[in-house]
Length: 139
Image 1 (cartoon, rainbow, N blue to C red):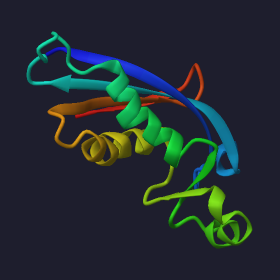
Image 2 (cartoon, rainbow, N blue to C red):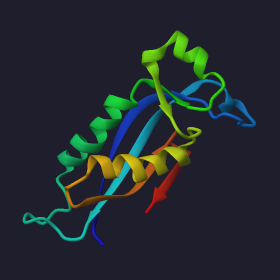
Image 3 (cartoon, one colour):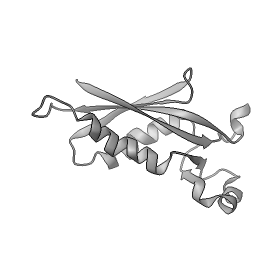
């Protein structure tokens, strides 16, 4: 299998509901998100996909939907107050926003939506919260 990889950096806040330590507080990261794509065959130029297509389909999705926003779980008890205070700053998701859950969501929901009809699969996503800490999900 041949794969290609491109990463994109965003800044985003979140909190992990129920976390036993400081991640239970509102805080943020400079995330680095790696997209690994594959195809059943190479295109006529010998590529899986042009790197600019990954940028346009996946990286720009991150920019539009998550960059410089606060990711909040739809069941977070702080959600009603945050919606009252900063409704346009929120990215409400159906999962507790751990790096693991973010990676799963990108591969299983965002990738298929953004790559639909291209013949390309988002095979893996690695979400780096810091240089030392990351989580990955692979199909």
